[in-house]
Length: 218
Image (cartoon, rainbow, N blue to C red):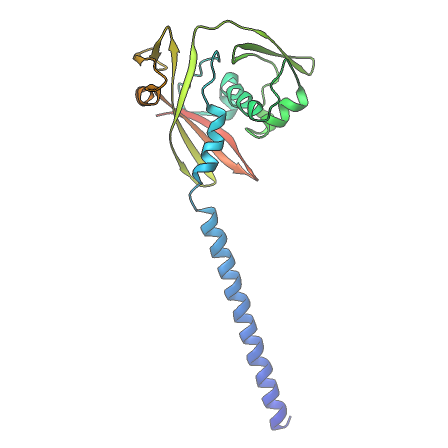
């Protein structure tokens, strides 16, 4: 091998080394960027959209969470409260709801194995019953209005949502231990609920949705 060939060979080796270094640096930057993205705080808009499933609903069963519980052991009405909130967002609430529409909304909230398939549940003044692959409803009287406020949140792909809750009855606001915490006023409700009962909802991000994994109290 003459001198010119040696020089060409050396140049090729140097170019290969440079290319290898560039590829390695590129991979490191991509991994670092993805890691920062996965660890970045959840945007408030995402949280607000998720909290819509918890929004105040008149004549809806009062949800009382009394202990830290995995979703597999959670009461059906806790799950149904979130599912019906999602169905409301999806505009599928009606006098008759197909099982497919119900499941489509429910799968945005939790995994399929936890979806209640045998229930009677009161939501916004109607009692909904699932029978023969269809949900039907009838009017239901009520004396209590479930009320909530978003109190705080934390996490990234695993998100904790802290919700202050209570109910309104006969013009008074109560926490979920039935202690009176104020006189109902639409303008003052947000402040009154600072003395409500904190309910904790834990979610895990699955593709584009945050799915419920457990509920609890603080």
